[in-house]
Length: 119
Image 1: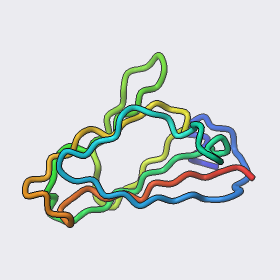
Image 2: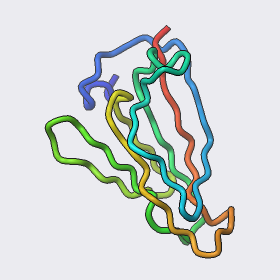
Image 3: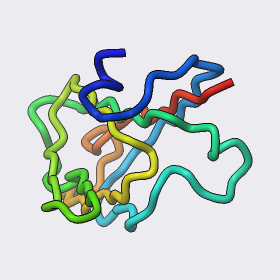
Image 4: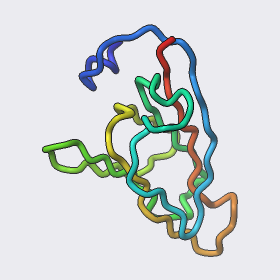
Protein backbone atom coordinates (compact mmCIF):
# COMPACT_ATOMS: atom_id res chain seq x y z
CA UNK A 1 0.00 0.00 0.00
CA UNK A 2 2.82 2.46 0.79
CA UNK A 3 4.35 2.04 -2.66
CA UNK A 4 0.98 2.56 -4.35
CA UNK A 5 0.49 5.76 -2.36
CA UNK A 6 3.91 7.12 -3.32
CA UNK A 7 3.26 6.37 -7.00
CA UNK A 8 -0.35 7.65 -6.97
CA UNK A 9 -1.63 4.20 -7.96
CA UNK A 10 -4.91 3.05 -6.42
CA UNK A 11 -4.44 0.21 -3.96
CA UNK A 12 -5.43 -3.14 -5.43
CA UNK A 13 -5.83 -6.79 -4.54
CA UNK A 14 -2.92 -8.85 -5.88
CA UNK A 15 -4.09 -11.62 -8.16
CA UNK A 16 -0.71 -12.89 -9.33
CA UNK A 17 2.92 -11.95 -9.77
CA UNK A 18 4.73 -12.26 -13.10
CA UNK A 19 8.56 -12.47 -13.13
CA UNK A 20 11.24 -12.28 -15.84
CA UNK A 21 14.97 -12.70 -15.34
CA UNK A 22 17.04 -10.59 -17.74
CA UNK A 23 20.70 -10.33 -18.66
CA UNK A 24 22.00 -7.31 -20.55
CA UNK A 25 25.52 -7.17 -21.94
CA UNK A 26 27.56 -5.05 -24.34
CA UNK A 27 25.33 -3.18 -26.80
CA UNK A 28 22.05 -4.35 -25.26
CA UNK A 29 19.22 -1.90 -24.65
CA UNK A 30 15.44 -1.82 -24.59
CA UNK A 31 13.53 0.77 -26.61
CA UNK A 32 10.80 3.02 -25.19
CA UNK A 33 7.67 1.08 -24.27
CA UNK A 34 5.00 0.63 -21.61
CA UNK A 35 4.31 -2.60 -19.75
CA UNK A 36 0.62 -2.59 -20.58
CA UNK A 37 0.41 -3.79 -24.16
CA UNK A 38 -1.28 -6.29 -26.40
CA UNK A 39 0.23 -9.45 -24.91
CA UNK A 40 -2.07 -11.71 -22.94
CA UNK A 41 -2.65 -10.59 -19.36
CA UNK A 42 -0.68 -7.34 -19.55
CA UNK A 43 -3.86 -5.26 -19.11
CA UNK A 44 -4.08 -6.61 -15.54
CA UNK A 45 -0.60 -5.31 -14.57
CA UNK A 46 -0.88 -2.69 -11.82
CA UNK A 47 2.70 -2.30 -10.57
CA UNK A 48 6.07 -2.83 -12.28
CA UNK A 49 9.29 -3.52 -10.40
CA UNK A 50 12.93 -3.95 -11.42
CA UNK A 51 15.41 -5.55 -9.01
CA UNK A 52 19.06 -5.00 -10.02
CA UNK A 53 21.94 -7.34 -9.25
CA UNK A 54 25.38 -7.72 -10.74
CA UNK A 55 28.96 -8.73 -10.02
CA UNK A 56 30.98 -6.25 -7.98
CA UNK A 57 32.96 -4.29 -8.71
CA UNK A 58 30.69 -3.26 -11.57
CA UNK A 59 32.13 -4.25 -14.94
CA UNK A 60 29.65 -2.39 -17.16
CA UNK A 61 28.45 1.15 -17.69
CA UNK A 62 25.13 2.43 -18.95
CA UNK A 63 21.95 0.42 -18.54
CA UNK A 64 20.10 3.28 -16.90
CA UNK A 65 16.32 3.09 -16.62
CA UNK A 66 14.72 6.10 -18.27
CA UNK A 67 11.21 6.95 -17.10
CA UNK A 68 9.16 9.44 -19.12
CA UNK A 69 6.09 10.73 -17.28
CA UNK A 70 3.70 12.78 -19.45
CA UNK A 71 4.16 16.50 -18.96
CA UNK A 72 7.11 16.09 -16.57
CA UNK A 73 10.88 15.91 -16.84
CA UNK A 74 12.38 12.47 -17.54
CA UNK A 75 13.76 10.50 -14.61
CA UNK A 76 16.99 8.59 -15.29
CA UNK A 77 17.88 5.92 -12.73
CA UNK A 78 21.33 4.33 -12.65
CA UNK A 79 21.29 0.62 -11.75
CA UNK A 80 22.55 0.06 -8.21
CA UNK A 81 23.42 -3.42 -7.04
CA UNK A 82 20.84 -5.07 -4.77
CA UNK A 83 18.24 -2.33 -5.28
CA UNK A 84 14.65 -2.27 -6.48
CA UNK A 85 12.62 0.30 -8.41
CA UNK A 86 8.80 0.43 -8.56
CA UNK A 87 6.74 2.32 -11.14
CA UNK A 88 3.39 2.46 -12.88
CA UNK A 89 3.31 -0.07 -15.78
CA UNK A 90 1.58 2.49 -18.02
CA UNK A 91 4.62 4.78 -17.78
CA UNK A 92 6.76 5.09 -20.91
CA UNK A 93 10.27 3.79 -20.13
CA UNK A 94 13.46 2.40 -21.66
CA UNK A 95 16.78 0.76 -20.78
CA UNK A 96 19.71 2.78 -22.09
CA UNK A 97 22.56 0.97 -23.93
CA UNK A 98 25.04 -1.12 -21.94
CA UNK A 99 28.80 -0.98 -22.41
CA UNK A 100 30.47 -4.15 -21.12
CA UNK A 101 34.10 -4.48 -22.29
CA UNK A 102 35.03 -8.07 -23.02
CA UNK A 103 31.36 -9.04 -23.37
CA UNK A 104 31.75 -11.53 -20.50
CA UNK A 105 28.33 -12.85 -19.44
CA UNK A 106 28.86 -12.65 -15.69
CA UNK A 107 30.00 -9.01 -15.96
CA UNK A 108 26.64 -7.87 -17.34
CA UNK A 109 23.63 -6.11 -15.88
CA UNK A 110 21.07 -8.52 -14.41
CA UNK A 111 17.51 -7.80 -13.34
CA UNK A 112 14.51 -9.55 -11.99
CA UNK A 113 11.60 -7.70 -13.61
CA UNK A 114 8.11 -8.21 -12.42
CA UNK A 115 4.54 -7.10 -12.39
CA UNK A 116 1.83 -7.36 -9.78
CA UNK A 117 -1.53 -8.09 -11.41
CA UNK A 118 -5.08 -7.65 -10.26
CA UNK A 119 -7.21 -10.83 -10.10
